[in-house]
Length: 145
Image 1 (cartoon, rainbow, N blue to C red):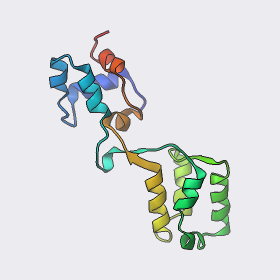
Image 2: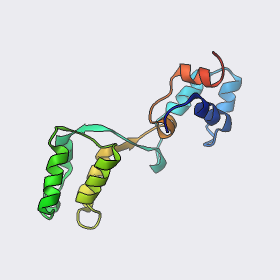
Image 3: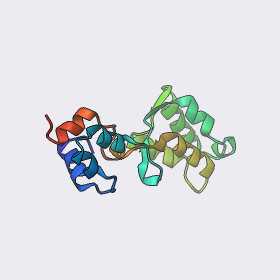
């Protein structure tokens, strides 16, 4: 979801992941709240999209034996996707096209490698808003200015 001050306020007040925002609020420690929200965390639920990457990274992740089993239409689609030199791996249409080319049944290794390129561990803020939060955003969410 896009960032809104109201959504950040709700996150801080509810503390659904039990990060201990209340102690930071009580201490007037807005930096502590921002740091807790921006901390990169482990686990599948914290995976976020990388976004735009160079095409050569995609090409290097593809297993030649799996590529050899793709249809000519799939090869053409792959060339179209990678031909511009950079690919927005966060775009849903791009993800769908890669999934269609490299399905789990016939290209599991290439598919896994492409997913690994397109995702990284992220923070709670990135999970919620797609970006980190700033100290000023935290202060605004708490009505400090």
